[in-house]
Length: 212
Image (cartoon, rainbow, N blue to C red; front, side, top):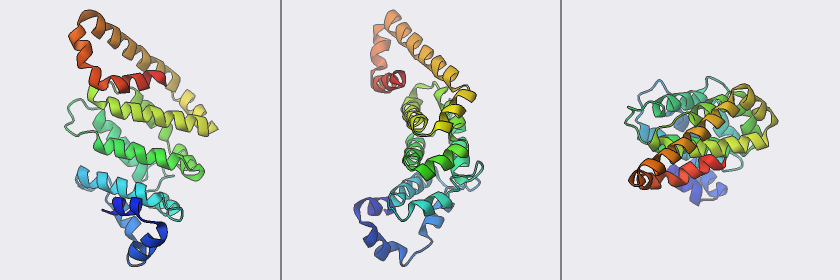
């Protein structure tokens, strides 16, 4: 509800309707993202989306970044990303993609701001994105595609991000991933046309990966 309100109301209306009466709402939403609390993933997804929406208010982006410790390597935001990567990298995980996609969307938004981008990059975002490149489970393709787009964004926008990408064997990870996708495509198409058509639902994500 907070996310919808923030997306549909001007900042002046939100100030009078929410922040005037609940000045610590951002901090309390951020508390839902603590990795050591047993907060349901659906609630955390809603919390991320709410912070993403509130952060789009010009006067609130700094408060949002501070609430999630965006510039701290072991702060709330980066700890959440590490936990998410461990989860989506586990083939036996029963969790869907909704939370990971919401989290990466939030990182993409944060990286659009010079201050926010420098904070998350300094906190170790690039090496974690490189880890996502290596995840090959088919149902995680939408997440990998979104991570690739985020990598593109930060490499072009922040010079130190490219250095970190190279030092973190990002180029090797990227070429290995491209090789995997090409070999998988050749194998699927060459040996079993039906298998190739089974991949169609994920085709757009594979194409995006190869484009990067």
